[in-house]
Amino acid sequence: MTVAQDILRSIFGYNEFRGHQAEIIEHLIAGNDSLVLMPTGGGKSLCYQIPAIARKGLGVIVSPLIALMQDQVDALLQLGVKAAFLNSSLDAKSAWKVEQDVMEGKLDLLYVAPERLMTPRFLDLLERAELALFAIDEAHCVSQWGHDFRPEYIQLSMLHERFPNVPRIALTATADEPTRQEIIEKLGLTTARQFSSSFDRPNIRYRIVQKHQPREQLQLFLETEHRGDAGIIYCLSRKKVEETAAWLCDKGWDALPYHAGLGNVIRQKNQQRFIREEGVIIVATVAFGMGIDKPNVRFVAHLDLPKSMEGYYQETGRAGRDGLAANAWLSYGLGDVITMRHMLDSSEADEQHKRLERRKLDALLGFCETTLCRRHVMLHYFGEMYEAPCNNCDNCIEPVATWDGKIAAQMALSCAYRTGQRFGVKHLIDVLCGKITPQVERFNHDKVSTFGIGHAHSASQWQSIYRQLVAANLLTVDMSGFGSLRLTAKSQPILRGEQTIALRTDPEVSKRKSKAAIKREQNGPTPNDELWQALKNKRLQLARDQGVPPYVIFHDSSLIEIHAKKPKSLNEFATISGVGQSKLQRYASIFIDVIYGQPDDEFEVPPEDVVFYDE
Image 1: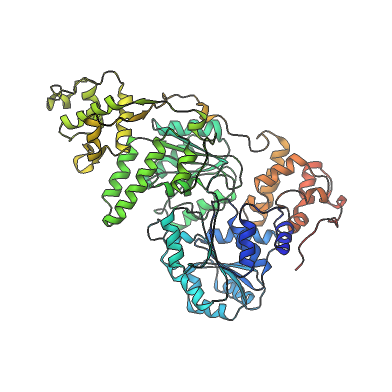
Image 2 (image 1 turned 90 degrees about the vertical axis):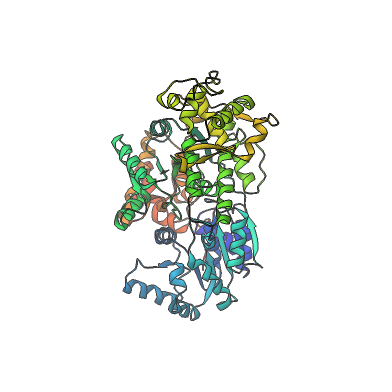
C-alpha cells in the first residue's frame, strides 16, 4: 500500500483514498477477485487503475462504450500513464501498433470492448502477454433485466477459466440486489470479496415539480439556476427530444438532440460537442448517458418519468461527478403515470418480467409522491439505511403538508364507478365539479349521485387527487378504453370506509422560485470573475489544442482550488488536488502565468520535497 499511496499522490495528485478505495486496491494488488458496488463519481476507476500500475504486467479493462474508452485513455496519458484502447474506431495500422505494445510490455492499461476481447485472436494475444488484472467495468451489463444488457458480457466468465491466476475486479454503480446476484453468477465471482459503498450522492439536490406547462417550468429552472452550465435533459420519445432541443435553441440555449434514430455521425458529433465544449445541453432519450465521463454536468432534468428507481438513480447520477453541487430535477404528472403503465402492460415481455417492472415503477411512483426525505426513500429502496433529513431535497427544504384524503378518495373512486369505469380523468373531474359539458349531457352523468359533490376542491386539486390514487394503485388506467379509469381490488377498503389515505398538498403553481429552488451553492467564483474566466479560457484553449475535453486538463474542482489558492510557485502548485507529477510539469507554469502574468522561464524547477512515484 505504500506503493499505491505513492501512485495516488505522484500520478493522480490526491493525498488520501476515499471510502473503500484503499481496501479494494490492497485486495486486488494481492491478487484477489473483487466485486465493487460504488456510486457514479465515487472513484471506481482508481480501484483498478492503481493496481494495474502497481502490479507487474498489463491491466485489461473491459469497457462497453468506445467514447468512454478514448476519454479515459486521454485522461491517463495526461497523467503520464502508459495506456491505450483497442476498438473498432482504430484503423488496421493503429490497432497493430497497440497489439505490438501489448506484446512488448509497453502498456500499463488497455481498454477493450467485450466483443474484441472475446475473439480467439485477441485471447491468443493475451496468452502471450504478462497480465496484471482484468477489470470489468459497467458489470451490470450482464443483467438481462436491464436496458444496458450486453450479451457479450455473459461470455466474460471465460476469463477466469482461461486465465485462472489473473485477478478480476467487476465494478458497477447499479445497486439493486437482483443485479448483484446476476453479476456474481454470470461472471463466476462467487468467491470474490464484495465491497459496497454508500450509494448516497450528497452533492445532488433532488427536486420533483408537479407538471404544469413543463417547458416553461424547465426554462425557469434553467434561467434561475443553470445559466451557462452543462446538463442533460431526458425525454421519453425521439420526437419530444427533437422538439425540446429546437425549442431550447429558440430560447437562446446551446442545446443538442441525441437519440438512437439519429445517424451515427450526428450522434457522435453532438456527443463530442457536449463532452468537449462548455455549457452545452444534451436533450436525449435513455440512449444517451451510460459511460459518459463528463464530471461537470451540473444538472440532470427529466421532462418525462423514468421507468424505475434504478433508471432514475443511474440517470441523475450523471450530474455532479466532480463532487460539486448539482441538481436532479423532474417534472411529473398524471399523464406520465398513465403512459408508463400503458407501455409496461402493452410490452411483449413475459408476465414474470412485467410483474418485476410493475414493482419497480410502483417504487418510483412512491418516491415521486412521498412527503418524506427523498434521499431516505431512495437509499432505503436500495437496502441502505439513511438518517433523514438530508436538507438537500425539496421535501426537506420545503416540507410538504398532507391531509386526510379519505372522503375525497371515496368521491373520486365512486365517480369512476358510477360512470361505468369507462371515462378518463377530465370527464370525471367535470362530473365531480358539477360542470355541464356535451359529454356529461350525452351520457346523463348530471343525474349520477356523484355529480357536483366535489365542489369543495378545484379542478387542479382533483387532478392531483386522481394522480395520487393512480400512483397508489387504487385506480388503474385501461388504455384500450381510451384512458378510462377502473377500480382495483386495493380500492375496496377505502370505499367501505375501512381505511384512510393521506394525500400530499401540491404547492400552487407559481412562476417564482420556491424555497427548494434557491440558487444552488456557488461552485467556485461567479461567472463575471475575470481571473476565473481567464483560467477557464486557458483550460479550454489547451484542451482544443490537444483534442481532449477540458476536464482532462483539470477538473472544475482543481481549477476552483487554483483560483482560491493562487499558487506562486511549482511547490505551491503541487499542493493542488488532482495535480501529479505530469500535470505539474505540463501546466503549472502556464496557469501561474495566467494568474500573475510572469514569463514561464522565471519559474523554479520541481521542488525536491514533492515525492513522485518512480517505477
